[in-house]
Amino acid sequence: PAVLVAVTLLAGAVVSGGVLYSSTRSGRTQVGGTLGPMFEHLLGSRAGQSLIYETGPRPTPVSVCRQILPRGMWSKLFLSLLIDLVGSSSYLLPVVGEGLDLAWAPTQTILIMAMYDSTTPNLKYVSFIEEILPFTDVVPSATIGWACEFVPVILNNNSNSVPSEVKQAVSQLVATASSGMPTSQS
Image 1: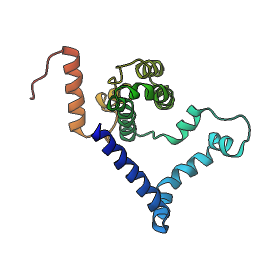
Image 2: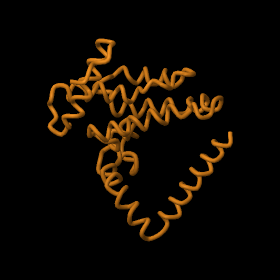
Image 3: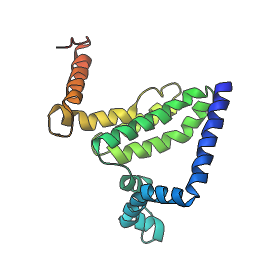
């Protein structure tokens, strides 16, 4: 319990410090430089125009997320790990955490739909059920979606930006998973 209080106080201090820093001139410049391109991209899209200026039908949360979320392999991996980390963080608060899952489940489902619905359309259902059911948060559904989208690309050597160490590690993991036995290092 004392650790949770300390973590909560530390998170509050970090958020407060961030808000105070972003209220300064240099903070506004840095935050604007970081978030500016994201907002410009959103405002330039059809979904952003509909959301901000109320022109036409309102965009769905998934269409807005598709405009904002990254499309690159490594940025999607980072975001997928972050989504799974937030989903698994309910274990920090044993009873209350399962109640927080009720709020996080739709959010996680929307994010996974926006990122991986084209490659794994049934993942959104698995993700929602995994988040709603108690004690199933350890399943990394967003990372599974990333693997379904990018592991075939890595294994087929279609991406020149993937380091050879990553290709070798993925090949070894796939071989281990398919054989059930660890492979020896050659």
